[in-house]
Image (cartoon, rainbow, N blue to C red; front, side, top):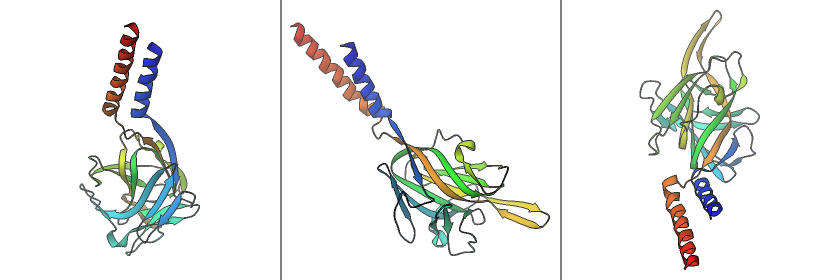
Amino acid sequence: MKKLLAIAATTALCGATGAHATTISTYNYTDYVSGTSSSQTYEDDGVTMKVTAGLYDDDAAATVTEGKYNARPVLYPSYGTGVSHDQNDGEHTVDGYFPEVLILAFDTTVKLTDLVFNYANSYAKFDFFVDSNNDGSLDQRVLIDSDLDSGYDSVSLSSLLSMDLLTGKLFGVGASYTYKYCNHCSLHKSEWKLKKVKFDEVSEVPLPAALPLFLAGIAGFGFASRKKKA
């Protein structure tokens, strides 16, 4: 009886909190499913991620406007995904001159565990956007100064930011405006391409919803036990 209860408890908890690690590559066509003039769709392990692009205001509000100036994601094989738009766009990286943002929309709840960037320069600043109240809009911004030691190396988000709070369906990652003076140049932007998105699939069944099933199982065991004694 105790063993059966333990199994039932474990099953209920796994159904509520189980997670599965997944990686979607945005630097090749392995996980690429389809694309339009304004979006890209990726899929891996049954999870779909739609990538769009936009620009945001580099101020306290940091309002993200999807598709501003016809902003759209562009996949460069071996390098990663950048942003292109109709203004002075340059190298089609995600850069902070305007500044630009990639918008990641998942079809299920996930917990981001890592983002891997390529073509990142040594003064890159990353802006992360979160849909904190799950209403379909990016309303929370976190600015991270990477302070990389060398330019144009692959860098990983896990070394820059704790991802414990980044759970949801909608995220944005952008490049903040920067200015750095050197003797022979004026560097005014951080830039990078997005190479990989790593996440855990989070169960859609929260613990409170699993508890009734667990309690019903216990009640069933109790009823069977009383019937046997009778």
